Amino acid sequence: MAHTLTWYGHATLGLETDGHRLVIDPFFSGNPASPVRAEAVHADFILITHGHGDHVGDAVSIAKRTGATVISNFEICNWLSAQGVEKTHPQHLGGGFRYPFGYLKLTLALHGSALPDGSYGGNPAGFLLTTNDGKKIYLAGDTGLFGDMKLIGEEGVDVAVLPIGDNFTMGPHDALRAVKLLTPKHVIPIHYGTWGLIDQDATAWGAQVQAETGAQVHAIRPGETFSF
Ligand code: NI
Ligand code: MN
Image 1: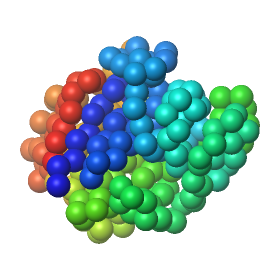
Image 2: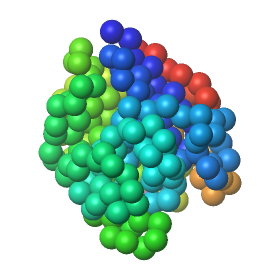
Image 3: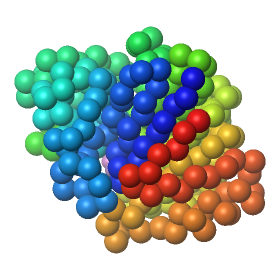
Image 4: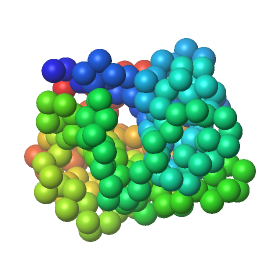
């Protein structure tokens, strides 16, 4: 079973797995790194890590147009329902659920989660997805480094998608420490380069990670896909 992960810049990702199309943190409008317009996005499921505008993004318009089910925390799902999104599935930290595309668990993230209009957005999250053929993908979301990444690593992570931009999330130094705790086979760096404030040299970071860990780093560009 092939899985494809496409980066649309910032923290926006597309994942195709077992015939299902997932979009994670669908920030297309106003995302200077996105090569795709929100109107062109197809989705069966939309996953949202936390309430910030650069993560909720175009979730409402894409969900209304495509009929996709939005998966996020309880508070964000309630907020989306109030905006007219019909299908939501709320979860919360530590809880998992088996969807047609795999088993999805919410993991903790050290960050904020207020929604764009100031509404309470619950706790920020990451996602640990176990695909239908048993591959584990860890999407850290916006987070600082935390020691319990070691517990996530104990699950056997195949692909870890980590922020490296610094300022709002882990920077390169802590993201390297995260790789050491998670011990993933593959790493994809995100949440950098969108604006000058979070510019990073992902290629240099990848070389350092590969020199110090057993992980392979794939510093794909916006619009590029990693298949596994
Ligand atoms: Ni954020
Ligand atoms: Mn962010």
